[in-house]
Length: 76
Image (cartoon, rainbow, N blue to C red; front, side, top):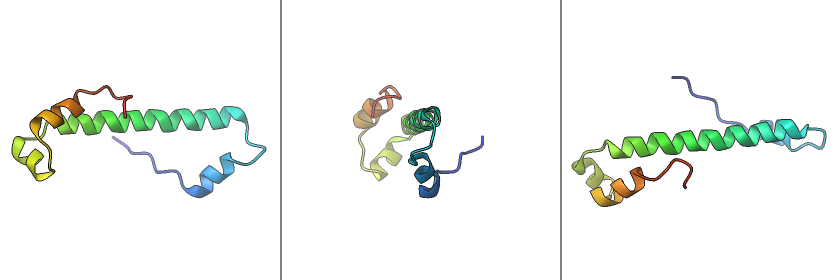
């Protein structure tokens, strides 16, 4: 699996310029949203696979971890 490079402030400032097409701004906003959703899904899946002793190490109970892991990916 490949990972996208994070957008630098320089790239984002280009999108804020007056001449930037609205389609480009919408495409970037959509890509950012989908990337966040994918991150939520991956981290919640990883959380659901942790052992109880690992959950204790990060300060979570199995109940809290299960509740968080069962949330849908678009919920923050």
